[in-house]
Image 1: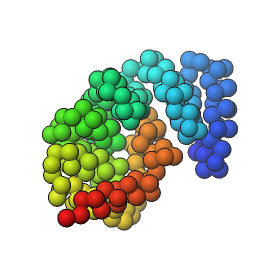
Image 2: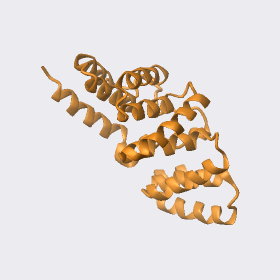
Image 3: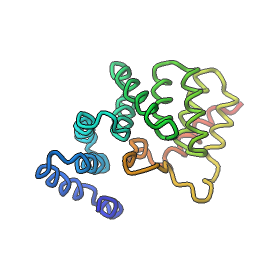
Image 4: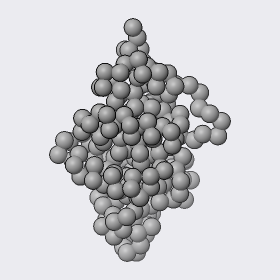
Length: 206
């Protein structure tokens, strides 16, 4: 239902329906998780974060919630949020070591913490797990620039702009628990990421 409403441009209506269902069934974690998804797609990011924290309080090993909260805190850009984000994302990586989106979130967090060598290593691992994902490659390129490796960053950005491989969806996820990818919000679509990367590549021209 959420997918259908979202494709029809009615994510706000899905949010209202799921909010009512969650109120009637407050102990159903699956409904809360779906509600957080709907809130995120409707642009209610503060509400989505609060709902996701409820999911995590009930299920401390919920990797989707760990990834969502951790990445959202990193994107919020407050240095005081980064220690919590690192703890949550490190736990998510331990639980799902083969998930490229989670590895990307953790690598992005390490980058924001200034731990560049660790960030580059984790983002390269994310790229191996989800090759060709422009969001991952964008983060990796940024980390390489910060580490002074501009030639490598240029190569990474060029690869991000290559046509997607057949059958590769942006941010393909392993199962429903990782359904919500905060990297794929309306203001961070793949098309926009590609535009940003093209601009960065231009700025790196010799």
